[in-house]
Picture 1 (cartoon, helix red, strand yellow):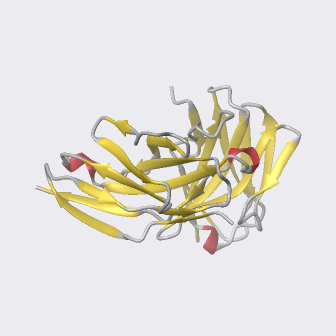
Picture 2 (cartoon, rainbow over the protein chains, first blue to last red):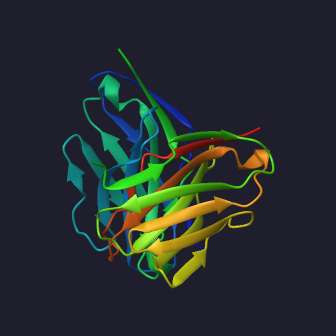
Picture 3 (cartoon, rainbow over the protein chains, first blue to last red):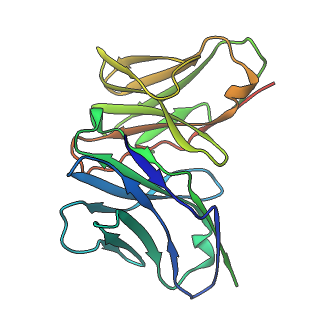
Length: 116
Length: 113
């Protein structure tokens, strides 16, 4: 069975500080992709970053980086230099290679609040 | 124009009514998905499709049906709406490959009274 766990329902960070959002996953498929999405209060889902299970280096996209620890089955999102506009819900998701039609499995999300 | 378009964006209706949510995409993707989002539960998959002849149930398909009218169009129907189907509904598309993200529409906020 595939499972994504985000243990932090809410996180708070001061502007300009870094914050880590936790994500652990479980799959028996040796090949998989890990994704993070941002959902601002307006509701849309915005793709942020991708990490492949065989990638040797952690993924980075601007201020976003993914702390990938394969042995621990964790894929934490790190946001550096937080901005007020980073306040949103963040979802971790996984796509096993054997997933039927590429379906994604989502965690329940972490609500991030950035304060001035 | 948005790559994945959902209509309507908001809908309020009454228990027992039939409702159709529509999704169209210009990304040329074969794979399309319908999700439902409830507070604290994340996104749950309702149905997904590879092409017009391929429809698959997700984890919460009861009470819903879908139609893939064309590669670019995927509709979700609630045959007889009930209040616990009040939620935010998303359509998404994807290209083939483990490294391909899903691309989401802006969502439909559905309220059933």
